Figure 1 (tube, chains in turn cyan, orange):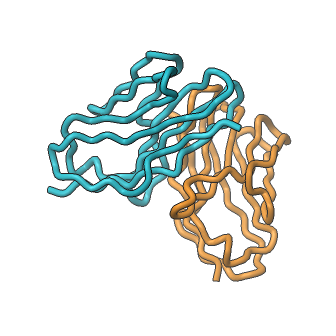
Figure 2 (tube, rainbow over the protein chains, first blue to last red):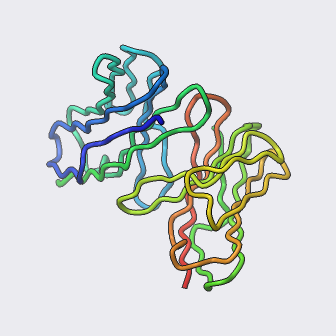
Length: 111
Length: 111
């Protein structure tokens, strides 16, 4: 079935550093791809999305490009802030209405 | 903005109790979902519903049931709570293949 793989382990970095979180997917069709963010004690919020190959989703300084050739949707931000500390989930949606989620990555930004 | 409201943020129940978790959305979305979130396991789909009185099993339905009598309300029922059902429970809603809107979550502890 469709699945999403995120890089293992938490990510710790200093304020203003460059952030990359890797996400690769396996899907039989042409999925839509999403990044969700979960701040402490809250539910998940949609951060950005892309619905077809070569689309770039962007929001709040975060970007991700839908790469069909490498089946990837890596999340990047050029200069992180302490307020970006959260858990980030990559997800895909196939032709149905279900989302398949990655296991998430805890990001900790140190002042 | 769509609002998804979960009735309780924190809940403590005893083993063997019947537990009801309620989720209400304020838009006319057809699709509603229940997930549980556990450290290291990410989000796992318990049940979902595409319409009133319709329900489909997700990946981990054992020990749970659901009810959707009205379009805006989707209830998750733990028939006889057990300690291994201690978790964060997240409700989500979606109109189409667009991505989900999540509630804030209910942290359930079964003692």
